Amino acid sequence: MWRNATDLLAGGRWRPLLTLGLLVAAVFGPALWFDFVRWDDPVNITHNPLLTEPWSRELLAKLVNGDTALRFKPLPWLLYRGTYALWGFNPSAWHALNLALHLGAVAMAWVVFRAVLARLRPAAPEAARNFLAWLGAAGWAVHPAHVESACWATATPYPLMVIFLLGSFWFYLRATDPAHQAASRRNLAWSWLLAVGSYASYPVGVTYGLWLVVADLWILRAAPLGNRAPAAWLRWALRPLLFLLPAVASVLVTFQSSSTTPWLYPAPATLVEVGVVVRLEMAAAMLASVWTHFFWPFGLTPNNPMLPPEMVHGPLILSMAALALLVTLGALAWQRRAPGFAGAVFGSAVLALPVLGFTQWPTWSVADRHVYLPHLVLTGAVVVWFAMRPRALQMVPALLLLAGLAWLGRQQVMIWRNTDSLFRYLEAQPAFSWNPAQQSYIYQLWGAQFAEDGRPADARKKSDQARGILVEAMLAEAGRQNWTQAIELSVRLEQGFGLPPVLRRERARWQLARGELAAAGADLRQVRQELPGDSATEELVREWQRRAGGKDL
Image (cartoon, rainbow, N blue to C red; front, side, top):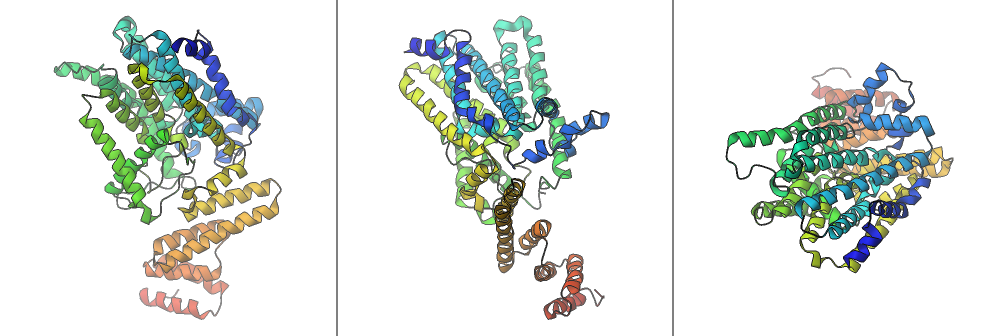
């Protein structure tokens, strides 16, 4: 069984990489002919001055500044500029770049899985280890949840970041291997440099140092577990700390970006606005979704909708949070009997920390691209589990499962053909209706794309849908006396379509109900000019004057 599979798929020095490349090409090949999508591609690529400005000191500063670069990702920006210099905005070139990086990440996953199996299961036949490493890399390559990172042009930083982290971990394995003690410091230095490269690619991997702690404690057993001497533990603790320190700079710049680009990212919620309990509840639910995405690759989406208030403590979020809590407690309880299970749970959890939405408003923060990194830990855990139980792995079912994942992955690939195919997919998702503001925003983007494509009738239709959704949601919130939500929706309506005088008058009414006299006064002054002599407006003006102590409007 092993010999035939190994010879066909994973035998020899280069055949595993060749077969992995063919598999990736078969599943993802159509993406080479895809277009850009109006889902951050204009902001990051086609309308981004960072790619077209001539080189200067000012440009170099912009590439690392959180405000203009949107995240701390200087290496992707350099890669973007090189791609633009060679091929301009040819979408095929940009998709080829992404697929090449995804294939590079897949190849590195195979290399690392082989190294992990050699470290943890040296007695297993080499052919078996090679095939299991190949199977793990192949499954991770075509998993439907990882399609977004390979097919969305804007997602380039994700596979680039993973390539650096996998290279870093390969050197870390050698640095902590007693068989390579002579080159330990050199390997550790290379591991650290590659980790810094990942932090400069995208800040999603900034908790990598915590992953090394988990790996040392429960997987590699490289921590001084049998040594109670404080000096031994201090020396060990300094090692992951070296990896965490440069990550802090990436995090700080990214937080600056979140607070200085409100046109793209909502300002982080304060503790008064979103309490600690809600943050922990949402983060636990999102962690569970990272795990469930791995085992149930259906209903996937690149969307991150804000949750309506009634869903925050609803059955979906509570059940997902409870699942995360139970799994985590189980890992804690069984960490001595099943250290590998504990390592998989804690390892995937710490790598998922940056995407769990701790600093955000309640939102479904985990999109497909966010599981690209933590799923490597889960894939590795499955590979090691089968290496421990070789008889449990049946060749035909394993290859059928891989074929099924590849088929599902191919279906997911096709949603990225263009803006229309992507938004049709999003429109069909249950989460599309969760947040009217984002629903309207997607219709606005959709209409803008139709206008750019020379389809004015379709553009007007989508624009009317976007406006209607905002008006309906705004009036519904006002009917429930949710003045804050109604006012926020009115602001979005005004920004996107303008605010009719009658709705501006109603917004002044809502602002008075909240005691916002300055904002209400400004709206009433404008309504007076637009609707002179309107009795309802004059009634509100008298109410405003009464609350303002008789002042003139």
